[in-house]
Length: 384
Image 1 (cartoon, rainbow, N blue to C red):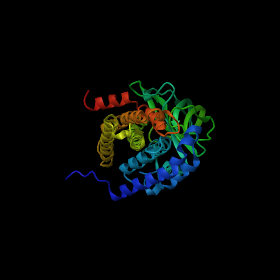
Image 2 (image 1 turned 180 degrees about the vertical axis):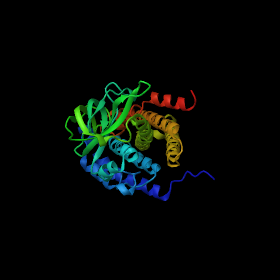
Image 3 (image 1 turned 90 degrees about the vertical axis):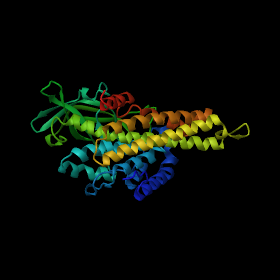
């Protein structure tokens, strides 16, 4: 069977509609929201109306029932305009909806997914801790079974979507005991906002994704029902790794969109900016920069879409997901850096959107597995 790089008609329509939405709805407010560090309920509501939540969830739970490449395309197009809004979409789907959709029982899905897929509510994924970042297995947050309740103690940090006005709760990774080999037994629990002993606190002073919601979570003798266990006791580490594989595709899509957006700004500026009597894009030094940027974006898109295709085919995709996340995030950084260089001094001013892309790109090399961790994952997959 011949290779086919064409998007389906539905995917082309999705790209066009999400691109138009991002340009008309998000772009006019993105700079102001970034400056104020303000999460926008208005744009959140309008993204929900666009069907950007629950993209890959069954219509049975008010999801869109689309394939994973469509989700990648939608995330990419939002990130092409603004990283903060793309973070809300990516985390809302992969980290918020994903664990419940893939590992929740029928009752949990029925209770939470409809509101999350409709965008009426958001859900966080409590993984990272102050002393457990790349070493996710080093979590110190604990949960002890006391009768019919789990008692949770500990804290989490850098959790997206956990303290907005519409945040409904979090999936929290906890240590529930010891395995026979002496290592911690990791499980995941569902904790609703408003539960006694649970507090989510919004974080400020961020360099990037300033209008995305980022939170610290605190648990002090927080009690949740026994049935709030996600899947089986001790399955939490496996669940986390599975969710992060999919999440890497989301971050890859954000990196791809960030690179494309920065490139679009750079080439538009280079075509308009005049020096020595002609547009600067006519100078070889600038033209070659733009050519390299375009080439890397094309390579990144092909790699990421292949990883998404493998997932759709239910084939192993962990290596390709790590490659896609790593390459797209580093391409975003390189393209954003060159885009600022092309803008010169203007690229350092907040009135030019390219400076926001430059800031936003950096997190992509850190979140959901640093570039160093991705290289570890890839090297293990190739037998090193």
